[in-house]
Amino acid sequence: MINIKQLIIEKTKVLEKYSVNSAKLEARILLAKVLKKDLNWTFLNLEKNISKKNFFIFNQLIKEKIKKKPTAYLVGFKEFWGLNFKVNRHTLIPRPETELIISVVKKKYNTNSSISVLDLGTGSGCILLSILKEFPKAVGIGTDKKINSIKVAKFNSKKLSLNKKSFFCIQDWNLSKSFKKLLTLNKNNFKKNKFDLIVSNPPYIAKSEINNLMKEVKYEPKIALNGGHKGIQAYKKIFFHIRSILSKNGSIIFEIDPRRVLDIEKILQKEGFKKIVFFNDLSNKRRVVFAKNNY
Image (cartoon, rainbow, N blue to C red):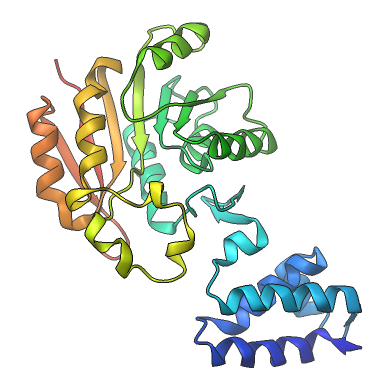
């Protein structure tokens, strides 16, 4: 038998040997997952012994971590905006910089507003569901190309008790008839047949840069990463259609690659957007673009 303290020390050394960042914390997170306890419990129970079964399971997770598999996939969830979201290999892992989208939404809208929200490429649903948590009267639709992502988003919606005000469907960047049909089916929630707010974190890594990504990132779905030439292909497709489903004075708030600010601005201007504002993340990089629909 081995206790938690000894096990953490031992496995931290193993992870450090394989250059795993924050090795001690990673070991503790994985052990907490195995023991079905929160992280604090592992600090308060250092002398507790663990069973042979849990020892075996923990070792398997350590082996996966050595291969640089993302911890979020190993434990099955990721925190975003103070909420826990189920994630798996079909969904992009939520990142802290994406939380800026939620911050900008709160700056631009009163949280008591009855807004309709569309989240394109919803993945785990973290952006849409975080907004709906902050805006009790809001309703929203999340779209994704893959059914497995939609299943995860629906699970998170139900878990957060938002399933009565959030809807999910398979949809590509082209806003087709099937999408308009969904609006019609949910006409009680989307009375104007248009959205007040459209949000997204589209794929924005240039195709030429995909092979140079860190090993951890390569585990994530390429469809959620590969933005084609210069990383702006998704934006071109989305912005070409977007004003047709955006309400008068409606807004879009998108995450972007800070290196593509000028490209994004040109695309938006070409599609008729005039009020365009960029917001900086905690690294002081332009990470989010806001644009308002002005007819």
